[in-house]
Length: 257
Image (cartoon, rainbow, N blue to C red; front, side, top):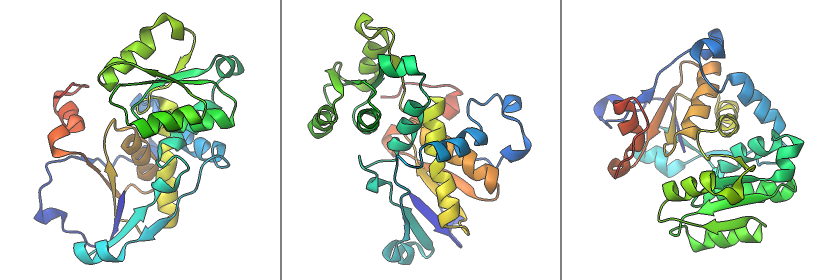
């Protein structure tokens, strides 16, 4: 993640990617926007997960700042125990389960980071975790999830097939399915990073978010735009796998190849 403070030459280049528009969410009720996640959800999540995740540092990069002719700061989410921001949402979602749901356990489809986050925090909270992982999932991540005590089910050639199996196979009936990017509790947990960024770099001008399933940018945008509507939030995704851009253009979720 890059945080850019001061002048930045966006006008000189066209990235072909939309920025998140500057809505002032603090003046609009969640129900009026028909949003599944509110700023209150994010601020509550920040308090809820505070003892279970790392408040990661944000540091200034001298060399990137020199290269870009701007003050560049990096949010070091790789310093979370499992190596990614996914722990924020996973911890929040697990902590919000009912006692019955905790006893029954949870299931998710993931090729890596979401699986690791659920497995690790499930172990800390004594919640059974089952993860459906595609056959192409990195072996190191599969093994780490197993070490953390998760029940690993490898199925399918890609994540969509793994998810279909996790949500339809009869042996998983009754387990709470926690999707890794569009579940409201996952988004709220991810949004806590936006609140940390504003505290650590109070004069930030632009926040750049990598986009995959878009859960991170959804949460961070809600948090940041509520507290600082003047800050620009930009999403960046691979040119040859621009799924979010394709979804925006189509007005719905789409499959791309």
